[in-house]
Image (cartoon, rainbow, N blue to C red; front, side):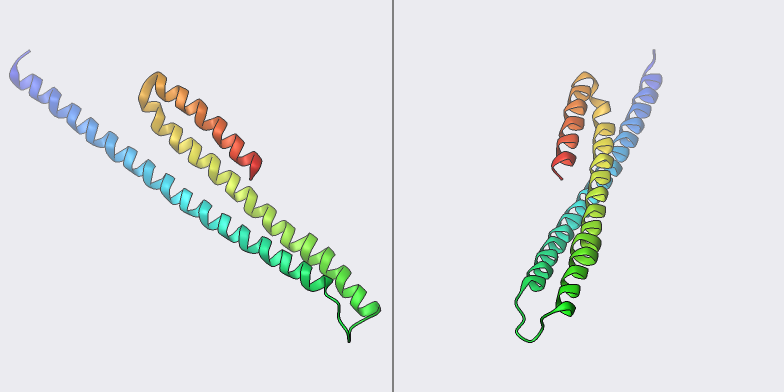
Length: 138
């Protein structure tokens, strides 16, 4: 093999390496974007849980000038439709979105790890288990 052939092969490998790095950087950007969205969802969930507690607290307060059937109906409706209804559903939907994003992040991370051979496969398995644990406690 001559010098020109070797230089040609070297240039091809360098192009392949550059393409590979570009692909890895794109994957890393997607991972970071998804992690930022997860953080926003977690903050939103926390805010919704605080709001749910505040509404429950308001509902349970004593009202000197508001008593009887109307108060009872308002308290029951607030529990049924807002606290145990809309807020609960909203929080559940946030949880589902976080779970879905965690799985997407895992797949992207595993895509990166595929390039590392057997060590990447082991890390990929660990990554899958970690994601499952995270989603269980979410």
